[in-house]
Length: 381
Image 1 (cartoon, helix red, strand yellow):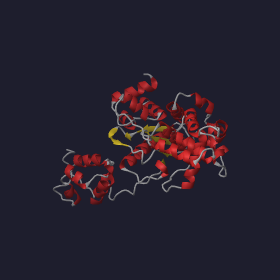
Image 2 (cartoon, one colour):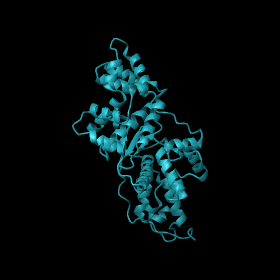
Image 3 (cartoon, helix red, strand yellow):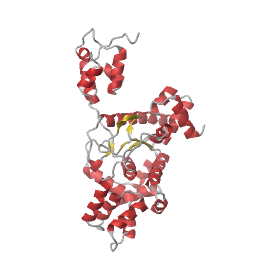
Image 4 (tube, one colour):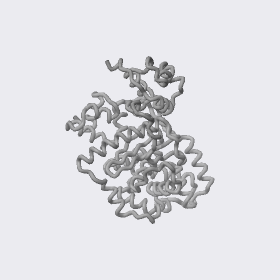
């Protein structure tokens, strides 16, 4: 019966949905040939319930939006972004959908943690007890280094940058931050996230902050991004819709100092030796990119501008990481999810506080087999 029910959609809602989708009018008209009749409110051509549902799914907008009397307010991004060259992006449909997905997950996590009696993350309390507004970036960086027990001599012993990135991800998860990563929108391999649009973003909340990393970035890029967004979270610098370049520079400097402390570089750099070789060596030791090392050395007047430009050219030739579409589906799904978010959802489902349907949706619109696989990887059962 639902398929025969015809519904009236306000013409402005249809026009808004088409514009929001980013799809061409010809493409939509081919898929929904009666759409002109829908817009003109032709009684004989109004969409059935099923057609309206398909329309919403095709344009990737919430079905409930079709029943609004007027278009929703312009989509606003309440997140900090790390983009290429710090240029704030005009959000694409892929980016918007990723933010909405992360926001929905965060909202669930906030309510779940509140039900367990959470108030504020302990790391935020500790940071605020040390931090004050007139600190310089080096002072702030060393507060963070101390709070997360970062030992650069231990970093030297790590195998590679991938292990270092995993260190930060696990550390922040342990502190209550949910770190997601993906190179596509959800599980849709046809919707790749553009590294030239953004590298990462953070949704700040005192109970359940969320960091999202664009997995198409290089490993060293992801290291800088995860620390950068964590710093944003600690400072509570939310809602950067209009970029404050001074603020971004401050946080970039903090991040750089965390990853390559001035004291460490001054101790390990010899002006009498070839700069290029030393940058390569320092990059291997600290597990971060050559260009990050070079930027810091240039600011410390330890290398020339020519040295820096040479390193920058080498780096720009290999920025984007190639993300394989192959591999084990269940391992890929597991790697995309925040560990503590995954544990909380599964725990809530298994204790009958969240339905299996809702749990499957939160974990990426998965099926029961994938859920069982995640549960086994998480709890071994």
